[in-house]
Figure (cartoon, rainbow, N blue to C red):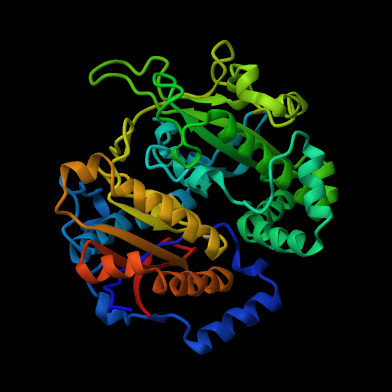
Length: 455
């Protein structure tokens, strides 16, 4: 394994989990992990000067022609992180100004996990209320290529068929339920503590696919070869699996209606430069887009689409006539919303700590290492053949692995992923010839302050 340059980073992995709520077993495991020095963090002296006051006052503009290499990238991300840390502190200090409220109970806050595709065009910040510039910090953003979080489960013509695959295989069920705990457990524990205190009402889990209405059936989700029906079926599968886990893991709270799972879909079509967005790039009720699919497109799964009608509907719409859940409001990070134009792939649970300005990235949340490795094969192919690559054939690509400080589970998956990467000849060849560089960071969930790490 060639020596990598590493950087400091921020994570949102356990950012929603109060430390007082961590059980003794997890605390012990964390202490053991630190004792083993599984991750050797750079001394503060080595990062002196990073996240300085002047850096925190602005979002730097990403170089128009991309990053020259790891040093260039590290310098930029450090400045972005400084601003993110400042914004996050403001967000936490003034919840009444920035936190999202329940549309059906506006006196209470909500907690939201949103799942989008890894596609760089699928940034939830595109839909923030202009009067609430930090609204995106409410969102526990967990992206994945094609929303493929549970590839072990096949989509079936009925919801029961997918549920049965879990019940008939206890080993698989335990594995996936552990994965779900890693995905939602910290946020749920925060939510339940706040609900007990009377400040929150519901916890939302949103499965958001994407397509392009101007070019349908082309230029949709690359992980599904632009097959809209398949992308929609995956969000149904995810919703069914998550619902089953919630019912079995939190039966009392689920029965009280404290959890809401919804399906949405983003339109990646965009208005011409200088034109009003009109009906472009909004987030729609998935059920409405399901209804536009032909019988041929639905095939043997027509009954599945009928079965979930109303089951995962959004609680409110901004425009009922047009079935719009959230309207496109602008592009605060100036990403390319029309085409794939990503230079790299980032794996993190704290995307907001490392978000680029002026350039998008392929985003993945931490998951099973084998699933991430499969995603990387897809995503590295896309960044090698996209708008950015064609315009900048001399620029390298990058993989940025960002760990959440203290998250033992994800650190274990990181180790597995690194072992898989070490055996991947294509990745190793590119690391050696400089056409690909690797950055590793660690983010503190309490502050989203990132640190470069050696390993």
